[in-house]
Length: 439
Image (cartoon, rainbow, N blue to C red; front, side, top):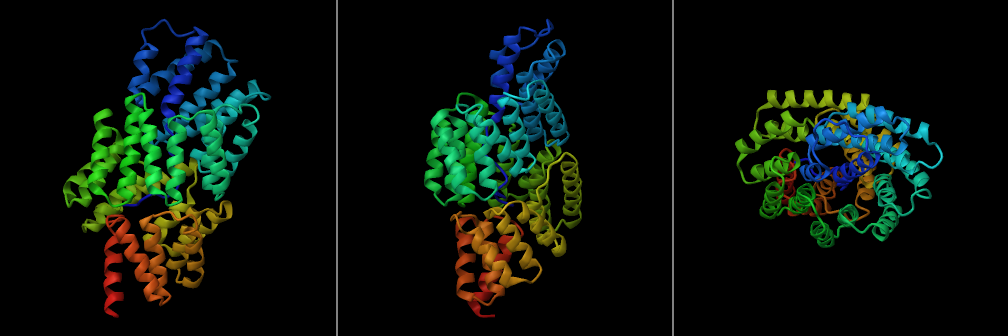
C-alpha cells in the first residue's frame, strides 16, 4: 500500500467542532423551532450526518444573528472538517468564506478565526500560512489546545521538528487530552520510537469518550501495527474500531489492506471499490489503482488513476496542493520530468523529511542517483521506520553500485513491512535476490 506520506495529522477534530457548534448555538438560544436532535443525541453520532445537521443549525442561527464572529469561525472549522470526511474540496471555499466573514466582524481579538484559518491552511497543505496563523493566534488564546495543534501540524510538515515538539509540549500542558496524545504519537513515530508512539495512542484511547474517538484511536493503533508489518494486530485494532463505529471508511480501508496482505485479493478489491465509491480520496484511489495494476487489471487501474487526476485538479481548484505526493505518483507511474518539477516545487516550500523523500525518488526516476542519495540521507534524519523510505533508499544505493548498503536498506524495508506496496514490494524482493546472486 502507499503508506504514510507524511501529510496526515492525527487530529480528531470532528467532536471538537461538534461540541463548539452545539455550545455556540445553544448559548445563542436561536435554534429553529423545527424538530432537531438534542445536543446529547447529536454528539455521539459523530458522523457526516451529525455534522450536516449542526452546519445547518449554525447557518440558520447566523441568518438571525449575522454578527456572531465566533460562530462564523466555528462554522468555517466545520466546513474544513466536512471536506476531510467527504473528500469534497469544494468545502474549502465555504470554510474560507465563513472564516473571512468572522475576521471582518472581529479583526482584532479573533483567536477562533485565526485558529480556523490555520486548520484550513494545514488541510490545504499551505503549512507556512498555517504556521503564521497559529503564531498570530497564540498570544490571543494561549490556553487553548487547538492553537498548538495548528502549530504542531504546521511545523512538522515544514521540516522544523524541534519547533513541532515544543508546540506539542505546550499543547500537552494546556490540554492533555486525546488530540494532544494522538499528535504526540505521530511525533514519536516520526522519530522512530514506535513503542512510545503506541503508548501515547493507548493513552489517547483511555481518554476517548465517544464511539468516534474510539474508532479514531483504534485506526491509528492499527496503522502503527500495519506500518510495522504486524498484520494480525492491525486487523485486531481495525476490527475493534469498526465495533465502535461501523462502516467507518478509514477503518474499512485498513481492513482492505489486511485482506490484501492475507492473500484475499478479491476481498481487498471489492472493499476498495466500495470505499472509493463512497469517499474518493486521492490516497484511496491510488491504493485501489495500484492493487488493480498488481493483479494485471491494467485498464481498470488506469481508470482509477484517471479519477485520481481529476480529484487532484479539484483539490487544486479548492486551493489545496500536495506536490509531494503528486511527485511520488508521477515518479512511480512513468512521468519523471513531472515528478522532478513537482518535487522541486514542494522542496521550495518546505524542507521536511517528507519533501526530501519526494526529491530523492524524483531524482532517482531521472537517473540522477548521486543527487538522489543526498536527499535520501535527509529523509532518514529523524529515524522514521518507513518501509517506503527504506525501499527508495535501497534502490538509489543499488543504482550507485553500493551493494551492501542497498541490501541492508531493502532488507530493512521488507523487515518493517513486507506488504508496504503491491507494486514496489515485489521489486524490492527481486532486487534483493539479484544483489545477493551477484547478477
